[in-house]
Length: 387
Ligand code: KIV
Ligand code: ZN
Image 1: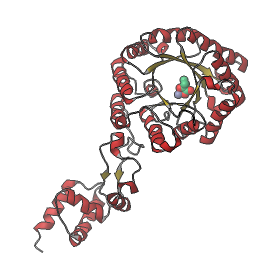
Image 2: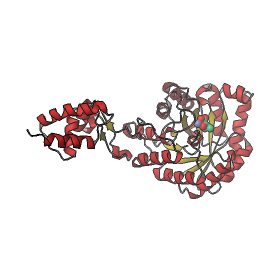
Image 3: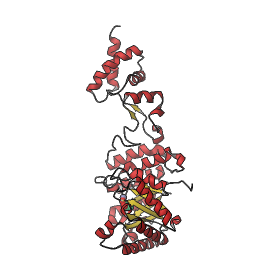
Image 4: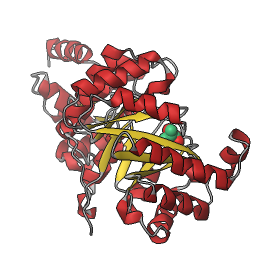
């Protein structure tokens, strides 16, 4: 297999920040950019410089502080956008301009009131213009997920010939099924003669909950960059979640793919993004949710206590999580109860545990979760009763 390095393009500060209520100021963006560089992302999309003076300033300041990571600014296929992005990116050691235009008939007809030929020419023009300012130009074909493959291939070939170093194939509306998205990438690999001159990028939205699956399908078909966000934040139902794709590639390392991500930072950075953006992470979120390493049913707890691999495919420390948790509820079993008593310093034999278990269930039926204090009281009351 060719080089299996997958470039991680983080767009938390651009697509992620588009979430209502998640607006960040420049100081917050700089702090997150520094954390993202330490995490090991290859590209930070820092913002959309022409959109507001605040975003211009953020991209400029991030360009000053980020050392080795590529800093990217978004533009429309508008010459002025590109000039403004180039200005904001001037201090960056590795600047990238991300420019593009809608290529689906929905966009061409309804948004631009235009035609395919005209859009193709605009795509070429914006890439050529961006090349006057930076070497690294990424082109996005917005709504590529619903773009006719033959036309998409023509656009991709033309923008690569114009100098694009990366071609982004966004499933902007989260429409594609994984096999369809994979086939789209494979179509480009097989039908664009100069495709070896550029990296193919996946940018998938989560409207049907398929963003992660689609990105992985894209990689399996030849894409070598994934655009993603911490906690899967992004427009509407969000973007591909960085922590998910990174851990999928790590877990399935036999496929031959790898990233530069320091996985032990995944939980800390998830919390940092959640706190800074004031956007809670759902408890059952893969990798970074508070329940991602919690075991609640008796059958699972018993298996987990015998060997954690029975119910955990990732060790919590590998992703910087606090550790596995055995949650005591009315669905828990005797082994979890005995284990917790042991941790609390009580030594009970099997008969004791049987008796205590009946009392435990009464508490558990009243409460969502039985706490250590409940068990300490239960144990002391039990010990106080003469045998
Ligand atoms: O979803 C999308 O198509 C985008 C582009 C601007 C890259 O975010
Ligand atoms: Zn997007």
